[in-house]
Amino acid sequence: MPDCSEYYQTEISEGRNKRVIKCKFCSSVILTPSSASFTRLEVRKYICLNLIIFHVTMYEPVIIIYKLPHIRQTKGSESDPETEDIIHFWAVEDMMTFYNVGFSNTVGNTKYLTCADCEAGPIGYHDIPSKMSYVALSRVLHSNSTEKN
Amino acid sequence: MAKTYDYLFKLLLIGDSGVGKTCVLFRFSEDAFNTTFISTIGIDFKIRTIDLDGKKIKLQIWDTAGQERFRTITTAYYRGAMGIMLVYDITNEKSFENIKNWIRNIEENASADVEKMLLGNKCELEEKRQVSRERGEQLAIEYGIKFIETSAKASIRVEEAFFTLARDIKTKMEKKLKEASNPPKGGHQLRASEPQKKPTSWLSRCTLL
View: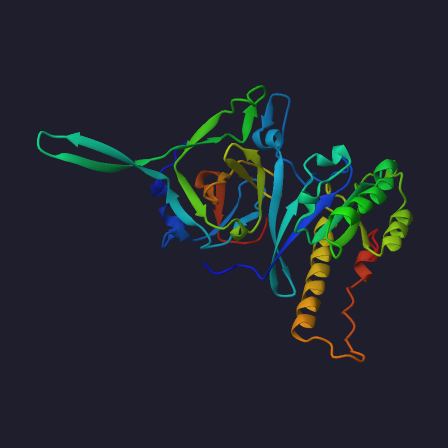
C-alpha cells in the first residue's frame, strides 16, 4: 500500500487538514477541518565521528515507520497481528478534539483508534505517555461534506 | 488551541452482560476466516460530539467492559460520571430484574446527583419479548427516571436516548451554575417551568418520556 506524501499534499493547508476526515466504511465524521496537524514521525539519529583532532556529533532525521495492525486479521494471528507500515498521520493533541472516535483497550503504551459508529479500525493509535493521537491518512476518507452518507 | 466544545459529559453504560450495550448499528464484517483486530482487543470508550440547543457537547461514553460479569462495579468506574444509561434486554427477564441491583450499586458507589435513564434494548425482537413496555415504564416511574426502548442493532432511538440524557445533565448543570452565581435570598423564587420536550413523535414510536 503506497503511503506517499505527494498524494496528500492537496489535503494539507497550513500544516493542518483542509477537509473533513471521515470513516472509509460508514462516513462517520472523525475530525472536522483544521483540527489535526500533518505529521511524519521522525527521530534524530546521532552520528559520532571521531576524527583525529575533532570529535563531531551530527544527527540526521530518520523517519519512523509505524507498524499499524491491519483491520482484518487472519484467524489465529491475534497474538502476532499482521501490520502495515505507515508514515503519514494526522496528529491530534487533545483527544477531545475528535468529533467521533473510539478508543480500544490498552495494549502496552497504546490505545488503538476506531470509528465510533462501525468500529472499523485501527484507523490510528493513541500514545498514552505523550497523550498524542495519530490518525493514519491512508485509513480515513477526506471529504468536503460533513454529511454522513 | 481553543476549546472546541462547550460541555464535556462523562456517561456510563451499565447493565447485565449480553444486553447489547456495545452493540452498534453496523459492525465491520467478520467471517469464518477473518477476524477484526479491534474486536479482539475490545473498545474502552468513545468520544461523540452532539449539538444541543446551539451548544457543542462532547460525550465520553464508557462501557463496563465485562466488569459487570462480576456483578459489582467499583467506585473508580463511577468516578466523575455525570450520566448513567441503565440497559436491559427486553427479551431477557433476568436482565430487567437486575436493574434494581444495578440501581443499588449506583446508589452505593456513584455521586448522588448523577442523572440516570432506563433503556430497554433490542426492541426489534418483538416476537421474543419477555418484558412489556409497561413494566419498563413502571420501573422508571418508581425511580423517577426517564425510560426509552431502543434497538442498538437497528439503530432505533439510540441517538435520542443519548440526547435526552445529555439534555438533562445540561439543564441540571446550568441550573446549578445559575444558583451559584445568583443564590436565592430567602422567600419564594419563581422559576419559569422548563420547556417541555416534544412528546408527540416519541410516543408514537414505542417509547415513553
